[in-house]
Length: 195
Length: 195
DNA sequence: GTCTATATATCGATAGAC
DNA sequence: GTCTATCGATATATAGAC
Image 1 (cartoon, helix red, strand yellow):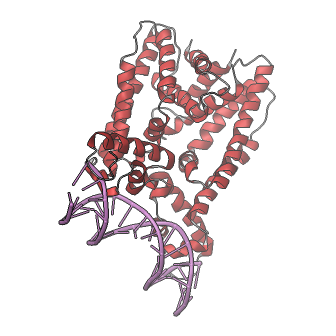
Image 2: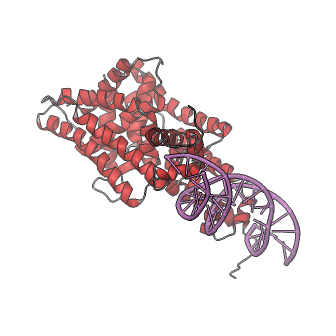
Image 3: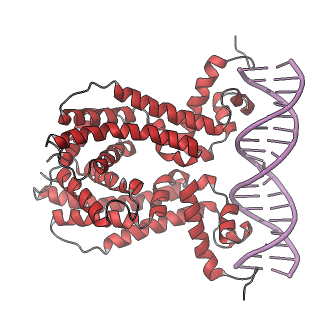
């Protein structure tokens, strides 16, 4: 029962978000028009406004959902009292979670400046919450004498920046398996943090 | 002798590049119009086309000049036979060079996708040349038994990614001096690479 | 070399028919 | 809920006067 016109609220919404995600990641928010997104979905531009009040909200919700997924998934990780083990788990979690969502990750880092000030503040708040998780591990290890970094906040940002670098080069089916990539980065992070 | 019209070829060209650099870094290439750039300079939009064939060339030349400056400045660094010392110098050079050019650095990383395929390839070639400089240091240290990394190419990208993280938080006059920042990162890089 | 004016195209968002 | 049509603004780039 193919239709060229009619009601599709159940599927059109997710397809709009999916198309916007893909196009924003490829070409950037400012370079993607609502018409382009609509064309990808197979509707006219006007139909998009049944699902989003405007283009800005479309971007913001993609980023907010991503950050909330990140925090939620990290919260479900098994906790451990051993800082070294906790750091190892963090490295593995961070690499695997982000490699599974390249478009979301790309947008979350590249499109911050296209958010309104209010939306920007909310995304930054979520990002800081995630970073705080790692810093707590480093502080605990520091206290226990396992880690030795000059500044836990800088070390937190340094570890995350290093791990994010994986996204720029890793491709599934490449020279290294995911387990090997994780092991290589864990080796560097462990040595950099350890006393 | 103020004039509202006339010939200013000596100064208009640099001012256009300066304005484009600033605006592209703040708002992104796609979000900045030629009229905005012209307004910043104090001329009409049509006058810009006496200095650039189009908007794309304006972006490309900013990025190419930056990458060539980077390679040129790094080439002038004093070379040393000791890999550990060479790595220490690289960390210091990279941090200081990039912190002095935040707008250029931002554009070089954020606007790659707005380059034509030919221009993209040329910028990527320059970037790879710079990365090769660091990898040569790591390989030499690896050969000498000073460094112990699983993969020199990944380690190269990891070190650069970690150092680039400085650009996201460092502000002059902040809690740490530039010397202290350099020392903190050198400590982490040294430990991560060393056997 | 810069100006004004304009060609041509596209943008985000809205209105009203179905 | 999606369509067609459109408003008003803005885009890159060019032409011709000075």
